[in-house]
Image 1 (tube, rainbow, N blue to C red):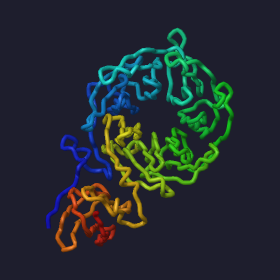
Image 2 (cartoon, one colour; image 1 turned 180 degrees about the vertical axis):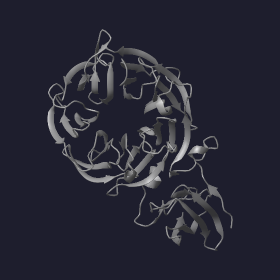
Image 3 (cartoon, helix red, strand yellow; image 1 turned 180 degrees about the horizontal axis):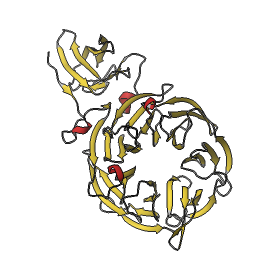
Image 4 (cartoon, rainbow, N blue to C red; image 1 turned 120 degrees about the horizontal axis):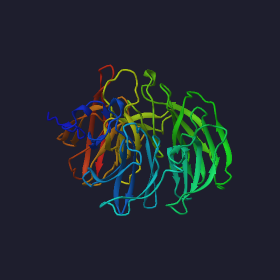
Length: 460
């Protein structure tokens, strides 16, 4: 029997990342050990992504500033620009980025910093800093831009006067009708000390308010928002850190940045949030989730020491279907040194993840394969299939990450035979002629018993 090892996501240059992964392909990684370093070797923080003139780009924050990368057609992170932070120092542990028109808005939450507005219209040749405001935005924890309404939400923001930092307020809301000169519309809520982060769509704002929980406001009138909901007490409560709304508006997922607290899966109806399930990875060992982005089907979680974790929200509670540990170092108790940011919304489907110690990662996650289902444990699609198309299939069992398969024609001839590791799916590399074939799959279960699965394949 001919056996071939399928392991398309191992890089010989990155042997440290060859162990703890499943259903994810590592495409590239960037790090720069010349950057000034914080304690425990931390140099990096948030990541973001955007498109410009048909190209995809990545943004990464560091102790020194904002880094820009072209994501090439060959899946490489190519540096194309850098803007030094108004405050560039080893103590910088937090920057945040959002896109509006042909600008990147960048903020920092350490030192005497600023809002930097960076023009990206000349990419891939260069980027340029076109506006800097350290008076109104001397420190900002996070920002969110409701692009359809041209409104910027600055979360836990402090201004400055004559070089002196002023006390922070929970949130300020600005109009971007003039993109280079944000104009203040509203400050609040005034009854809580902070809004840590926000997600806003169609003027509905979901505010993550730290130890004060989750709030929902309607900013249709941005100078006088309407309070809709206060989720001040809930199970698995800790420090309400960040959340994300699904594109179809029916799901909201948020995390409490507290040791051992699970991630919350919520249903959204009439803009109000109801928690329906709790999920996570290694929460029994005090793991900590950080930033989240969700599609209609999957929740992508930057999970600090657990790395990138992806969950299928068609299950309740959502189940993990893929992971890659960007932080494989063993450091004893959870230190929050791993995955910080995640961005899975590039048109190509490629996924960005930033790790506090190990830099910026570029992944491929096959959401089309992992999202397919037909009610069987062995899912083949498309079936029947046209001649010349690859045969793709997966095992719908979260415990399987290694299996054997063979494709046999009606005469009993073996057309293809392989062993797959570190994933629960495969794509046939053989072009099948018109006819009927038999797919045979086997794997070892947790009792070390051999489980066999079979499926007929029709090629037309």
